[in-house]
Image (cartoon, rainbow, N blue to C red; front, side, top):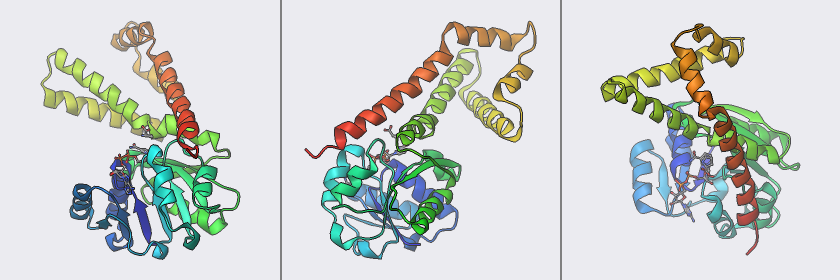
Length: 270
Ligand SMILES: NC(=O)C1=CN([C@@H]2O[C@H](COP(=O)(O)OP(=O)(O)OC[C@H]3O[C@@H](n4cnc5c(N)ncnc54)[C@H](O)[C@@H]3O)[C@@H](O)[C@H]2O)C=CC1
Ligand SMILES: O=C(O)[C@@H]1CCC=N1
């Protein structure tokens, strides 16, 4: 499968890096990226072709739209739309499939994907949504692209892509935030920064792996750590006093609301 990326920023690099690591040939990936420095970095890092534009866009089986939501309209309006028939796979937050289709002169083959940056290490999770006229083969191609770097799940309504954006698209940032905070605490408690990082990262990795391997709920796993009258109980009490659970729920709600808002703001024609 030949892939053309439009935009070679952070998320595109996570996808491309993950694909190359999984054995997808770098010669099958071409990137259109307006920053010459970024092009040089992409070439050097992954061995892919990168330049201001894609020499033969028609030759790509899938075109991955990986620019910022606010750039999408202008970028799509600049494509030779009537000559393009292949699948457009947009990873942009908020931007609706029908807007992408309209900006491409009524292009029917649009799939929205919401990946995340752990794709770089083959541990991504992506949500997928297809316009009704997307063929079975095109749906399979979209899924294949995302599964090259992790797992993919189809959602039934486009609004659910905003939810996926808030949970797993933005999610790694919430996790990194928690990691940063726990590392800070470790250092304040007297551990050296190197030891702090190792303890925290292994704790996250171990807890995530345990949760994925067990059939019991995270709540049950938490209960198994929490000895009556012990240390964890005091730690969790402080989290509850700080309303951390509610803050996490609010964070996801705020991210989903912004995804919806970006769709409204950047999906308009002027
Ligand atoms: N960063 C993340 O974790 C995730 C990002 N996304 C989506 O991916 C898209 C890209 O996000 P990031 O990679 O984070 O942003 P970014 O700013 O790192 O990447 C955007 C890239 O597009 C390039 N660009 C701008 N105009 C262009 C044009 N006309 N032609 C070619 N390249 C152009 C920029 O130079 C930049 O390198 C966004 O729509 C975002 O919503 C989706 C899931 C996760
Ligand atoms: O922050 C953003 O808008 C993008 C979408 C999901 C993750 N990053």
